Length: 453
Ligand code: FES
Ligand SMILES: [Fe+2]
Image 1: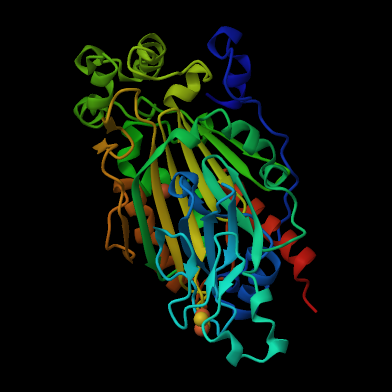
Image 2 (image 1 turned 30 degrees about the vertical axis):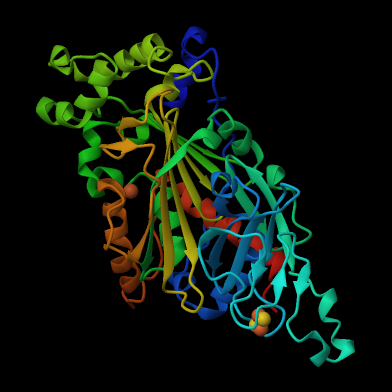
């Protein structure tokens, strides 16, 4: 599926789905991506002023805020964010701070409340952020106007089954920010997907190492050697789209081994076997022609999708097997399949540019009527009836699946070595150009919102 292959594909093979045409290539510069960007405190402060406090960020799944009074909190850099569904059914986001003396208003990560009561001196607020009670009110001076206090609301919106916030009152609407990739991703029923894995680890690496990594697939052949048995990792067969919005896309064929794989059929069957069997394919029949599996899988999904509880009518054949991977500026990556989405995000650390939080969700679309399902991505059976607990810890404490674990194992070593006097600047291949594009977009944001004085 090179650019040429996809453009030349007969219309019948892609009558529907997402526009797979290649985006025009932007002209990229050649300024160094200086290693200090990953540890310099001044640069880090500019990122906070110019980008983190200006860009749209995800705080929760809509599913977590289904009922009136449901709330979710999140720490984001040194900020504290609260999302809550009000009595009017509207979801609002606030800074999660009590106006009395700055206590964190809601310390729990999730819950349900009729009122938001500060755990310190019990000032309470409605779900819409209005003050309700102040104990010993006559003891406060009248000019303090305690009963006029409100929680400070932040811009928020919902999209893709997620609740987003933006600390900049003058930001562009979320849908505009998402641009063409928002339109493309709407082909997937993300709002119906259920989170079956939720892990957050604190890592000793700058957040950009995470986004750099998901902006290139050059590392796949060596860092993820197992993937060659299930995907065509070579850049020659992938398509990279760098959109004007600053978001990017990679289309990488999947559902069969790479053309570089000769033999190794036992390994292909070990990795793909369960998924193939679910779709009525006996992998043994494909011995000697494993590369035909991608097309076979597409045909079977088309044939049996409805019977298995899926609606694949909105997808073209390529989407049924391939890896459609989106990197959303600045810090989100999504690998979308019709039945699942690996959601990856690096969040800024409150005090240290050389640390960040790395969040991974696996969102799974369960076939209609089924409560358990074998997830080919997690290589495990997932259960709809068991809500995914939030697993937190240090990098390496929890598994995020074999592939993402391999990524996580890289970044702290890279962070350390970037300080070396022996490292001057990057050397990028063509297939790593999304990395450069990401840094150029970051510079554009910083120049606009936090110019160097
Ligand atoms: S800090 Fe919240 S009531 Fe005192
Ligand atoms: Fe990777």
